[in-house]
Length: 290
Ligand code: SF4
Image (cartoon, rainbow, N blue to C red; front, side):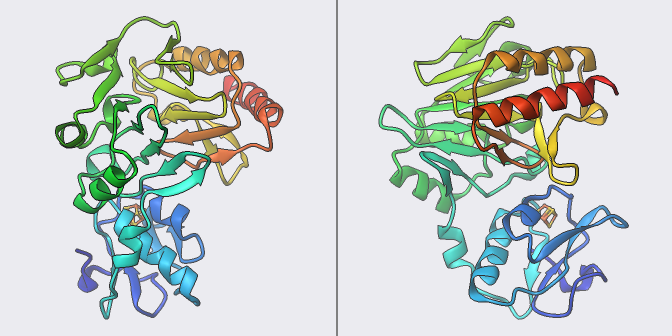
């Protein structure tokens, strides 16, 4: 629970505040950008402006629910019942954002694909009874695809509740209890809508998941940089091999998609697949010069 005594001095006066336990995961800034911004001085989020209307207030309360470290508080305390019920939040078609970030994955985002043939959880949200109830009402989880070893968080908790088959690349699975371990560098079709694309680099066993040639879940391989308005990867957070990660980026030229949905960094929806392709080429040019 966020502590008033640890409230960051930058917080605007008013009910909402961030304390000094923030791990700079960016979730609150994505959910409620009118309220939360990043302090370069502290490398943490703070409340730049108190919410001014009901919708902004609801988004700020959703950030309280999503925050992996319980670093956001209100004084006096505000109820968060409707914010709890707001997750998962539909992004487009049958793809949902789970909220409920887990500290064990350093606050990475996770996603749910809802479909009649079996729902898919992409990376692990925090273990949460309310989220479990909501996902159960949406049909549960048949498959859990884990993009890489950093973002597995509470995978065992979700597996215990839904009995889902966990899919992960063997190079990252290690001693984890994983039902389906993938090998090699070739794409693997899980079915006619879902393709796993090995993208080694950030970690040796990083994978991306392509859904219906529209949604690309990228783990920590690729994200949208809001400041520079371009797709980006991070050499400073490349734990395995940068050259390999560049080759993995080139490999994405073989695929059509309109969305990039990362664990860390911003999501981005291109206007269409051609627009995404241009952004990918631009990223390749920029990143390969580093
Ligand atoms: S969601 Fe929590 S941990 Fe993440 S940036 Fe915001 S306050 Fe910090």
